[in-house]
Length: 392
Image (tube, rainbow, N blue to C red; front, side):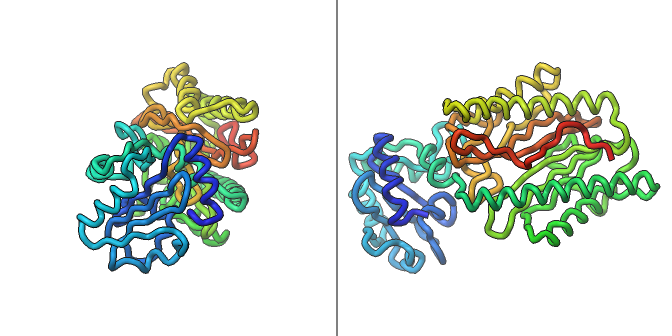
């Protein structure tokens, strides 16, 4: 959240970027980045603007009937109050006229996670006399990065997920060999119970997918459609969780109930090597402080899968941002397929690395780890990640 202690860092970044300010806008939660940066609490149903200038004090434009949500706004900062649209537009013009400002928009909608400001609002701000550019780099640096406490929380959860995933796969294998095959849905519920025991939480239940079902990256097992896990099956387990108030961890593991087929090994090896190619590129660039963009890591992983003959079966980005608040965050993604993410991966940001191959009606495989960019170090979680198919 923006406060008197963080303001100087933001203003230095604005000056370095040649910007006169960062204009934050929100209306009924359309822009969660603005809401989090401003620390708005309570009922806010009218349009909100706040200008963080390169120098001087921030100024907010607030509606007359909604002053309560601004209780955390420092008293020494400016606050203009409006009721009518004429008053709103007048205050806005006074703040931004003749200035080069950043807002949460992405030219051409290249990165939808940044495109939070409606076109009509952009028209209003430009009509008020402002030159508007994307706030992409500001969002990366001041919204998406983790704290030391966030990294520690993430690491604790990541290791819990390893234990939970491996126990679930061993259980499924033992039950299959004993002639009591557990279903996808039942194994999913077992994982959720383990989350409760470990004191971690999730927003959606994990994915447990057998064989051809794993060819759907967003497969959802259902109790009313029981699919047993039998000897000879491959099993995908994708699980994500966090400590209450902590940072998310997100992993995907692949197992074979009994010895895997040659086809399964072939697909798995392509996925694993693609993951490791992305990790290798990132490690080298981070260690040598060379600039690296999310799209470059996506290209590195995708080139491996394409060379193995599965390029058309890798149908999603290599990784999504995991910011300090959201599992699918607003920071840089490893993506040059679904979107054109050209943002730099800077110290403090984190993301998943999860290439996959999906062959409908036959097989689906994915390997997922998480990575955090430290100072000259790429931190990959969990500490020990999957190399071979896990035979259970």
